[in-house]
Image 1 (cartoon, rainbow, N blue to C red):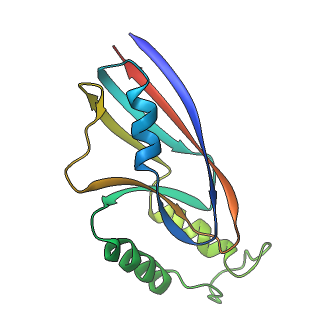
Image 2 (image 1 turned 90 degrees about the vertical axis):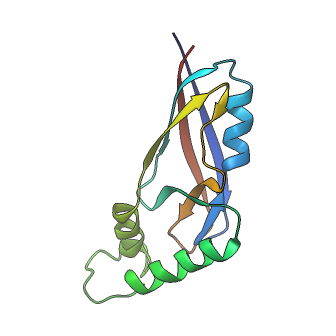
Length: 139
């Protein structure tokens, strides 16, 4: 049994869903583990991870609009506004999504479905540098 880790660093340009599938697949292909489990963990409280459709870009656009409606910026409900009106909504969006994912690795490949991709969901309006820790265990 082997274990490997890697930190994927992604610069974002503000609130949007970013496809990181190719970067994850590239790392897995060089890992020399054919069967195992990949865990992804984002080290932030205002960004999250998703697995969703990567074929039609309307899906990510629709998700962004859905979250804009569900957790609007500047909602008077929120007291925490230390870093601006998108600060607490970013934390709420993270709480509603995921900060970690677990994906099987089979035959040296991430076992995603046909139309599935791995996404970093940036919840802040400002550009940021995000860190996603990848941990692979297997043989």
